[in-house]
Amino acid sequence: MRDPYRHYDYTDPYNETTPHPRKKVQRRSSGGGCFPVFLCIFLLTAALFIGLGKYYNESPLTIVNYIVSYYSEKLSVDKLISSLPEPVKTLLEENGLIPGESEAPDLPTENETTEASAASVETGASEESTEKTEPSKELIKDLQESLDARFGDTGDITDESQAGYYCYNLLNEKGKTVYREILDSVTNRKERSVSTLDSDELNTVYNYVMADHPEIFYTSGIHYSVESINGVVTSITVKGQYTMSEEEVSSYEASLNEVIGTVLAGVPGFRDGTTTDDYTKIKYLYDQIVSTTDYEEGSDENQNIISVLLFHRSVCNGYAKTLQYLSQLMGIPAILVTGTAEGGPHAWNVILMDGGWYQIDVTFGESTVSSQDSTTSFINYSYFGLTDAEMYVNHTPDANIPVPTCYSYNDNYYIYTGNYFTFPDIETIGSKISSAQNSGKNLVQFRTDNADTMSEITDRLFTEHEIYDYLENVRSCSYVLNAHKDTIVIIF
Image (tube, rainbow, N blue to C red; front, side, top):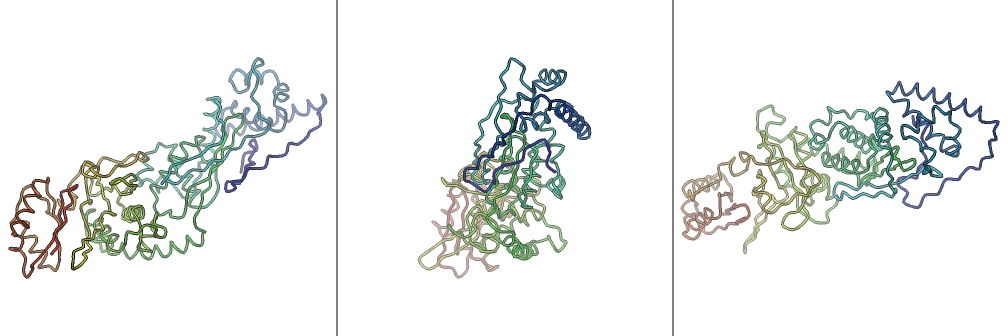
């Protein structure tokens, strides 16, 4: 139930037109005979609110201030203050909750209401049209404590249910409460108050919610309404903005559940009870996404998981969110990272595999090599399991979300598979080439510790033609170098 001491009229968050001003009710002069009646009403109300304050662990001063705020909307504030009993007036003046006799109170003619729109995680932009004033710090503290007590209900969204999400754990307890409240509002399509009075904090926490939850594919942001009295923010109310109806979301979710169930059923060890490491599971998901998705700018819903799992056409944001979500479903923490790569906007992942954080760019896993006779598509592992130093050669994260340091290397694709070389070990490389051909494959991938080692290997294999010592019935082959990562793909 909304509190009786606040005015809750506000403009529709979805209505971007200029709100109509509320009509001012003309009142007749009450005359001196009404004062005893008013005083009785005021004192009875004060007793009631103080009793409620004890129930909600609020201080009497806070409750009295609420009463003042409520009646200030119904009466002229200076008339209200002058009619207060002297002990009450003195108590409020001493605590800075009303101006003293020498101070000119800054009084609005009506309750100030502002609106803003919190941008989506991709943009991070926000607006606020309220002219801010310097309110009483004690009053803000009391209001915040009151919000914490009254608006902490988040239904089934508990601390335990969010404990596995990376961004959620970056927040303090107050921030986690706001996080759950925003998540409750967005996922349940309801308008609700949140336990913060800071719009900047609201915007940050909203970005954290969306960064943690790639399964929320149907929103474009949130609207929030800010109510204030005398320049003091008294409440913030949020409501989601949606790109789809509830019926559309339900239909997509049913289709997604079917596809995701099929994908997860194929993850080694995830359903059959055998023990497999995180590397094996994540590589399987990486391969599935790359092999079933085409990179296509302008594709439908390309900023979310629908584009990959249902439409099989997407761009980097769709690729990265899908890998993140599937990893999370297996209980493996994964983070969406946004920034730039090779000069353009980009998204990729940081994933916790087998106890260490690794950089992974699934979008760059899709590669194609064309020759005069044919075109070969393959899964490239140059960006699977990198350290920060390796990834940041041509990737730069933005500052929206702190990213954990990645320095582990055991789950790098080349190190894990034994295809990493610190010297030109042609005999071992040749053996791996022969083994790949014998198993029906037409390519192998290697990585070296530096460009000099790679140069020696390519000279011996291709300039001196030693590669044909390890291939049967092959007259020509080609290779592709990635100078950024000292990797090579040999196609035969």
